[in-house]
Amino acid sequence: MSIVIKRKPLTLMEKLYLPEIARGLSTTFRKLWEKPVTLEYPEQRPTIPEGYRGVPTLVKDPEGREKCVSCQLCEFVCPPKAIRITPGSIPEDSDYAHVEKAPQEFDIDMLRCIYCGMCQEVCPEEAIWLQNQFSMSGYTRGEMVNNKEKLYELGGTLPDEHFKWRKKKESAEKGGGHH
Amino acid sequence: MEFNPIIVKFVYAAIVVVVIMTLCAYAVLAERKISSWIQGRVGPNRTALPIIGGIPLLGPFLTRLGIFQPLPDGLKFLFKEDVVPGHVNKVYFIMAPILSLVPALTTVAVVPFGQFVTKTGEVIPLVLANVNVGLLFLFAVSSLGVYGVVLAGWSSNSKYPFLGGIRASAQMISYELAMGVSVLPVLLWVNAPGKEGTMNLFDIAQAQNGFWFAMWMPLSAIIFLVCLFAETNRLPFDMAESETELVSGFHTEYSSFKFGLFFVGEYAHMIIGSCVFTLLFLGGWNPLPFVTLETLGMDKGILGAALSVGIFLGKMCAMMFLFMWVRWTLPRFRYDQVMRLGWSILLPLSIANLIAYALIIFYLDTAL
Image (tube, rainbow over all chains, first blue to last red; front, top):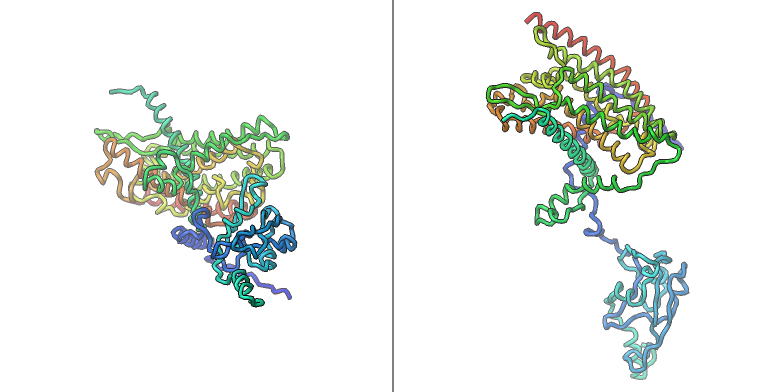
């Protein structure tokens, strides 16, 4: 249904035009003294809303163990095929030898990534997170590929005191079944 | 010590041109800053010169104000690629930007910037050419500025610049008339019977030691101001450019330094326009209505001259601010509205104004 809004005839003051100009000028003059509403970007950053999906990153747990077990689920689910994982094994003498696998290489091509967050959704280990960083820039295509080191640097530590693998190990040592 | 008057004039001319060009550069900065403040932005605030920008407190403050911005702005115009499209008429294409700047700088010659009162009380106008036909010369030459616009539009040989050029010429014709008629009451009053006839801008400014003309001829002042906006192609009358309709009008095909000349020309026109309005209606270098530098006792010597120039430039800057303030407040008129305003409102109004003031001045001069 269309609504027809009648244009009101102008009053005499409006037809004279100059008073209306003065009114407009006074409005802009007030605006002249108001604080800018813009953000001076590189120095001032916007507040990121909760649940924001920024650049995907890898995280470690509070003990410093890399959470990724290179199951490659994220690699399979990634719609633009931005993730490439080379799985590797954890050495026998490590505390976490029972975890068995960790990524040897983990590359995310940020020129392909579409920030959909499916990698985060699919990850059984909660190892990959889309965090707050929203700007990625580089001079070459190579620079735009985040390798494992960069991903951990961006991701940092996830303060989650769950320690699933430690509990698994403990319960296995005490002869119990699942934790 | 006597100086050769020709050398003095040369020095003065050099000073005036340098000052006008600097003012143009800073007018561009002022425009950018004022527009950003009105729109709730910050405006240019990054450019810093190496040494001055490094002074603590002052350097960052000036950088934030964008004081150093005009320099890279100008350099940009110099170093960008100068494109001359293949389809243009080269001679006129290159001539047009020069033609739009030269009249603006020529009119400066007759604009007095202040007064110098010698010890003996002799008043010397600070003007390059103290000619008796000052105002007439100014109108004649400043109207030539439109040739630059028209020529640019025509020689670009493409449709948007062409439309811009046509509009500029039509607008110039329409508003020049009302502008000329609106200042006639001022001239009627200045050339009172028994005095020597004059159209000298200095004499007109000196005649405003009582009421300023804007105060007792407000209608003349308003009509003149509106026409001034139209003449300088400023919003709300920037028909020639009107970037939302005509890409950017007459200078669509121009780039680099040629565009820079148009740009400087526009601001030079604005500055001259502001000067003329100040001289005709805002009392020139008289600090307040009924208060002159003489009544304050500060008119003698170099100090008095500096004070008069300062007051004059202050008023001119206020006018420049008004130009910018209006630009960032009002939307552009439609082309037919511009024509209607010019021909069927401003022209009759200015003629009626002239007749009314002619009668009033006749009464004042004869009956009193």
